[in-house]
Image (cartoon, rainbow, N blue to C red; front, side, top):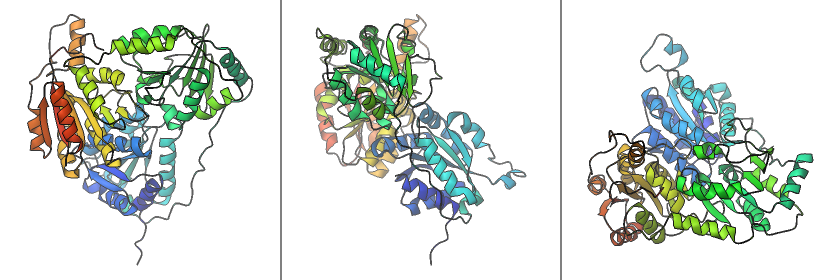
Length: 537
């Protein structure tokens, strides 16, 4: 006999249809029906040790398979543990479906234990929040997927009352039609085409919306047709392979890189902002051009309410369709004479040298040259992220994952685990500072339980290096930034993985080569001196 559909089943089936195959979280009694429904629909539930890490695992999967991530959290403290990762999804434009269990509304009138208005908590950090209703389960599920993925992506929260999850429900009968890509037309498009045809020093600044729109090929075609150099935000690294002659790499946080990139940008006579979202950028990127003297064309997914910059023309449109409309039938041409692009690429390479005998730069260079080109890397927030985001060359998009909108610590380990779950045959490496690793050390147990062969590289300098550097720059007394050097290799072994401490390039290379064929996860603790980032970022 066929089991009657529950509201939780209708929700789970819609998520499966959206491509979701994994959900992450920590169960409580209030979400047991949800987890059962997800599993029945074909979505595997993965038990994490903390909801915040679970959300980042879900994001790691999303960057590999393109489907929305799923975070499951129980009532009260479970839901509250996920607040950071939901805020991160909001600022980092991650389509994350957040499912929380809650006490039934009628019961909450006379029952107070763990009764909390989840929707009020999540409302300011999500694109939308719903309470599931049995008669509208299909509509709510469809709305959640659409809102999370359309326009500028982000998280959507669904609160699921205990009785509603189990309530009988009908199959979803209503689905939205997917919107077609929109390109600009009319006088503004004609003006933009005239500017492009006449530009002698055009620059493309590309962001995450290019990846969401699947516009990497269109961007590359535009760059090569007109000889336009491409700068990306960190999350868009690899949208043009970074060994390409026109790729100037990533920008966003490094003052050292900005000393070269911002003056170059100031020379441009046309700036194409292609899916560029300034939420990733540091204060130095506030109003870095004058649209009254330089032609600036902004192609973006949402209206400019940030005021980080302004443009001469603004197209809220699909990036790929717009690039093709801009360049249609215009003859190919070369711009930026006198070898300026090559000279800038050389200057950037010299600013971040790879010949350091030992230190954070040596760790990054050794990992990049030892690990295969197709490796997916993740990086935590801190001084090492700024350096690595400049030095780690990406041959393709979504091969360096990080939190660059919210810049939260503790993301690299679970991001790497999620990526490895979704891409078990690809090498995956995470880079953490020792403080960031300590925040999520319990997830090493999860990695062991799942049999993941992820590589975790930890920069061990016993300090919050970036904050310590800022403290010194302000000539303040050293306080609250240093801690002990712990035995992280032993910690890995205790959790069932392989652990090794390295203090030179040779030992690191050997450890990486062994880790690539290991039967379980490997944690490599790279012991470096304090203050190693001085002058490097």
